[in-house]
Length: 120
Image: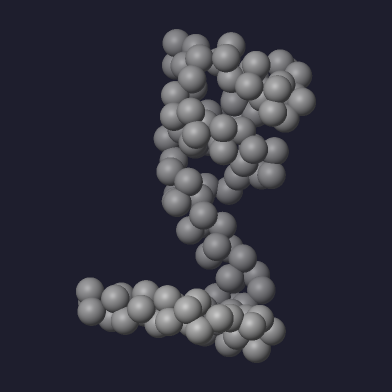
């Protein structure tokens, strides 16, 4: 499933992931306080996300249908395809050349890879 979420939609999703389920009137208030959005902006964003089955808006209660992790994975794959032709190896190699990772960070990455290999 395509979980493409645009920047403004992502801001609303972050609020929903935090609140889990919220009355739409309360969501309008929160979006106004945190994002400076008007009521119409919030409702337009709710409608767009609901049309794409990313959130549910039933009986004035808005809830996320997609977990943050699912969106993060989808967006990561798109970025990997766009910048590194889908090659995770190219990403890691490029990152390691440009960034100075601490020994602890390198060990943590190695442990994640070792754990993944064990589980396969």
